[in-house]
Length: 141
Image (cartoon, rainbow, N blue to C red; front, side, top):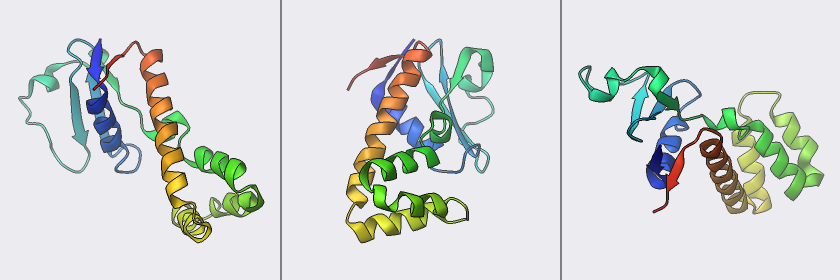
């Protein structure tokens, strides 16, 4: 099974545009096509051909938290880039609003773009590893 990298990245972004479980994307093992769905809206009509596929014939595109790209990635970044503020970052995750506080800290340190680059690279590596583990061949753009 193969799928275009750009479509896979877009599906991954869609899944991660909401909290885990709200948006989903399924990759057809037979066709390589991706079906998007959401708990909030109906994107596909009930008679969509993709709806007729069984779950056994598809793979769920993972949420970043399933790939260790949530809190763990933030803490890894803090350990690598701002070790003197790592304890402070860890404390952010004891309460709500951790990511907002983390990003405010990065803005204060002038590291926001470095974080976005770090996060993007980690996501790409994790998604490519997920593809390899699940037998998904990537069609490069």
